[in-house]
Image (tube, rainbow, N blue to C red):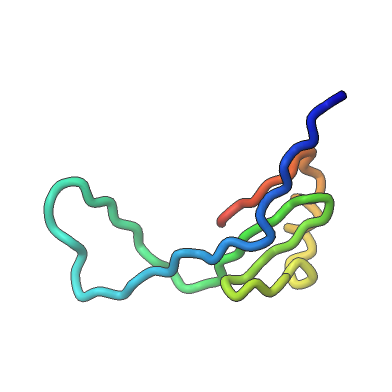
Length: 80
């Protein structure tokens, strides 16, 4: 009998960026520019949910993305 695969979490609260005057100095730091726009998590577990940072499902607003993700064969939780 095949083992049941674990389901992805229902929601992971995203880490939000912090506005600062200048980036930290010294070795070991990596910096990423923040662009305005929407940040969505994709939860794929039988159905597809595109989750906002507040946990709202926007799959109906981005139907083409949700449809493409629905073709994946495995469950996943994707931050992007």
